Image 1: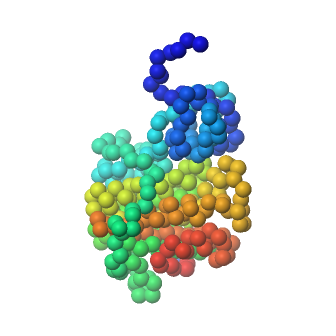
Image 2 (image 1 turned 45 degrees about the vertical axis):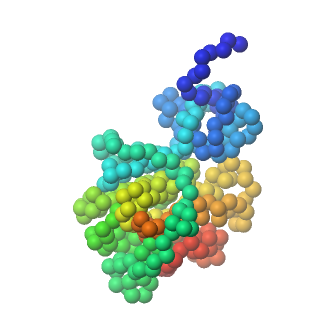
Image 3 (image 1 turned 60 degrees about the vertical axis):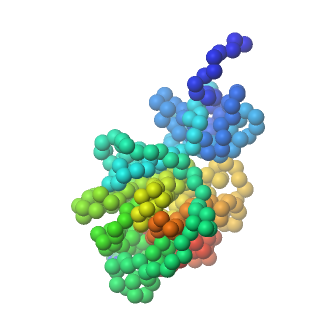
Amino acid sequence: MIRRSLPAVNLGVVTAVRGSVVDSRFEDHLPAIYSVLRAGADRQIVIEVLAQQDEHHVRGISLTPTQGLARGMAVEDTGGPLKAPVGEAVLSRMFDVFGDPIDRGTPLSGVEWRSVHRAPPSLTRRSTKSEIFETGIKVIDVLVPLERGGKAGLFGGAGVGKTVLLTEMIHNMIGHHAGVSIFCGIGERCREGQELYEAMKDAGVLPNMVMVFGQMNEPPGARFRVGHAALTMAEYFRDDEQRDVLLLVDNIFRFIQAGMEVSGLMGQMPSRLGYQPTMGTELSGLEERIANTDSGAITSIQAVYVPADDFTDPAAVHTFSHLSGLASV
Ligand SMILES: Nc1ncnc2c1ncn2[C@@H]1O[C@H](COP(=O)(O)OP(=O)(O)O)[C@@H](O)[C@H]1O
Ligand SMILES: [Mg+2]
């Protein structure tokens, strides 16, 4: 074999494609866990490495549809994890899980790209002050007040008004909320994203708002990571700009559900009720990053879908344990 000069990129070959699961073989350097691989004619297929099978093989989950991907195709290791754009320039924009604008606006410039995989702040950095966060909806402020820097859940079954109540809160709060608001849409209807964007534009509150969407039309990998992308932006505003952040999530159950799909696709043994055995770890990895530090607070309001109205469902129970306030819809 003729030794070529060191290639600038780490190239591998696709060895198996099974729905969203893609196996690839790398001769020299095995990509690290969470590395992003790209394949396809326009490098449009994005794969996140989740397992190293042996010396030469990695298994990953695709964050894009895998249509057209075949065995033998080249796959490129980008050498880094999934990244989200952070900076002033992300304000008033709408993004997908890759940090690409989906609002048909101008291309993004003047942003820094940060890994979406980050550790929660350490205990010593956390602040423990307790203040009320006014929503402007009287019945909530009197009966179930929210805490500044707390996590509140709006839970209920399908079609009971979680999204409507969340939207109502946005309308009431964003006007007098001095900080930044980040809306993260996970696995819900696509039109809801569009409607919210138009409504925020008409209300003139977009300049202090960022929207990130991975709705139900997206593959499980994208729905699983979109929350991490939104949190990375929230952490930037809290830590670098020392501003308060309001993080709205619709719907956190869909994050758990996406994790369940990813886990099943990766061949893990299901746990109780078919949920992934790693549900607690995955959820706390995300929820623990929503924290108050001395630089600023991330207050979060999350819609929680309760499957079949069963409040003992493991997904609901796990979510409740992270929340500091609850409102049943
Ligand atoms: N407070 C309300 N008053 C009247 N209709 C409501 C109210 N809340 C919700 N709805 C109706 O219920 C429908 C479903 O609400 P939605 O918020 O989308 O449910 P969820 O997000 O819980 O699945 C809405 O389209 C709306 O027509
Ligand atoms: Mg909804």
